[in-house]
Length: 411
Image (cartoon, rainbow, N blue to C red):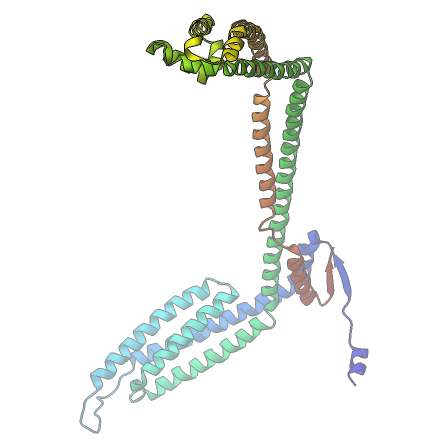
């Protein structure tokens, strides 16, 4: 039969509501109800004040009542104990009444009323349990206090039921206002985040423009006539270096071709001359740095002493016919000419490299890339911790539906 019940079940009226109209809608739904509820809260407050004043009078009556001496069956006199208990009981209770009545008459909120009444009831109830000895001489007064405490408890339970049911609309209204505050803060935060993102995007765009400017400047430098000239000079320098290396190789070969005879000559050469000759044999390219005539003198000395150091007539003849000195002088002169050209070429290269340096632009590009990267990271961090409004809006729709009795859909 469930389908039959569902058939006649009343469907909630659906209503769409703009977010900006929520507060006015809420006010329209709760204004009259709240007036009625606040009237009931005021009635409860008066009832609590009357009950507490009645209880306060009960305690005053207890405090001023006379009693005869109390002698137990075992002959013990407990009159002083009873008097002390009564004094403490009444004194502690009076402090509670003064404090609580002062709060109630100040017109505290509905929840505060519940809190202070619950607190005083719990404490008075505890006092009454601690004052069992007072039942012996003050049965009438204690019964009155107990009865009035029960009335206070019953009234408190009625009030709490009222808060949980009828007055819950006020709590729901409070919850709605809290949700509205969170959603507004979220919207404001999102707006601020979007503004910050736009500002960061604007700065990143400007930095990228500056980055492109630097790259274009480097491209201009690298494609300038001077850059083409530099490439030409660098190619020429490679050629000069190869030419000088070839000449050094020829010098090495020339010296190596007579090194056998020269090394034999070392046996008869003087000590000072011997050291210098060894240096040339081990590093023939030093001929380019030292005086060229020295090696010619060494060759002449070897020729003059060839028969002392060489026995083979064919080898002697071949050695004497070699024009090694002229060849070396030719190589040295050729090397010097190429070296002078190379030095001039290197000077031009250095000058052009200094003029075509892109170090400043490259440093600026590195700096700009670092700034862009940091701003991109700042943009990413802006999204962290954002509140999801979807769930908040769902909660808001549900509470508005509960209050109005309609199915509220926010747009």
